[in-house]
Length: 596
Image 1 (cartoon, rainbow, N blue to C red):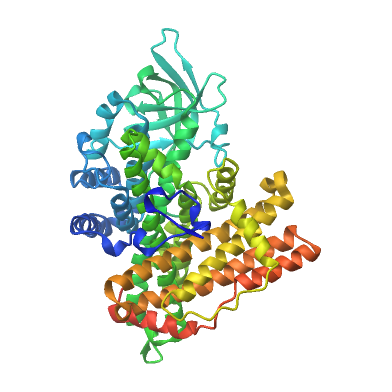
Image 2: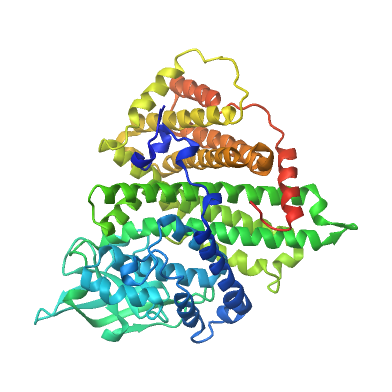
């Protein structure tokens, strides 16, 4: 496989190219200024959010809006907004760091992410100069709050099927909007709504910037939700809402494209927030395990508890590694596009769009890692974990929405494969040449070359083989099923999981290799152990997904040959996972918090 040039990396290429550790960014490399921004976020949560979690969840009138205003006064809403509009103009990975830290803020994190992401970015990236000058400074300062109105009662995952209508007024000065939106985050206090509607009989949506003050905007009472209870969630109704024609965002029928591209950003930011939330839960669970005495010993002394702590930390370390790798890819792509003469706003969109595959993977992996963490957090607390008075109650309920937000995990799994195959069909991503090479390799005698015992050699070989396994299954599925593959959702999700494990496992390896290069192996034993623990999970899970896919579409000699190939490509040397977990857990328990 050829090696990547980090300035020319394309989304999805991780499956067919090798990346070196020098070309990835790891969170340990954040500079002093970025660390100060992160600390400001932590201080804000400690001073303003954590003491008021119960008040927030009770939807105390005006509280959430005031917190968003205070966050704006500290500059937390303007990290990625250009300086000419009153922001700090920081790069994408800095905004990822903010999302990560604020992610531990429960309902507040949801309000902030909706405002700074899907509420603000459509105007920043698609607005004309007049629109940006009017709205972005006030959104960045927190003076105005934003919401995003896409979902309708009968259009969720199928967003473009929305029924909200916009009709040009007789005098040609306004679009009159009528329709209903639901699950609108920040709906109760937003000043600005990004609203998607179809003009007349258009096939595709158009986006509009709607001010609450325009009139014709009403809403139902707050929704009663399982979790994120403090997040304002309303049904919003537009009844002859007259929107000035100059408030159309971008071009007519470009709304669906806006929605899709903004959701790419929302997906990877959700993964970052899930990491931040997970770290907080792990620290709380470790602290409790050190204090809870059973059979005259802290429960942190028991192997069953240590297993949970190590697994929780390993999953989070893995997703975090992939998050900032993808974030740096987006930053590198942006710099390259701007250097090539592209407008900065278009470059921001294009760079994220290029890595939409990775954004979809990370949304799934981040939300599912958090779900695992909160579930085991409850378990470590035991009976107290089930008490509404203990901290795991809120964490457990708040986490569940993340597998539905920003496109369900099922949709994102399907998108992962769909986007890769479409890029392959356009010639943007050559998947079939390496897939054909793997098929030919199955007919050859396995390579029994002398084993390389150098650090990371085994992991690099495993990654190469996991890529081959994924290409083999995906290539065979495309050739066998052809046009009907799009209807085989179970097989597509199998392939998505295979590709996702490849991406995240490789990211873990690259982060750990870079850390070792900076600090030495002795100082990175915890990270090395987590890498190896994750590789065991990845190999087993990828083999299972591959096997299920092959059982579903292949048969006879072809099936037998590919199953043998799958076994060959998922072969690993025995590794004492128990001892590795013990060592990881002991380090965390000694620190009494998540410390990687």
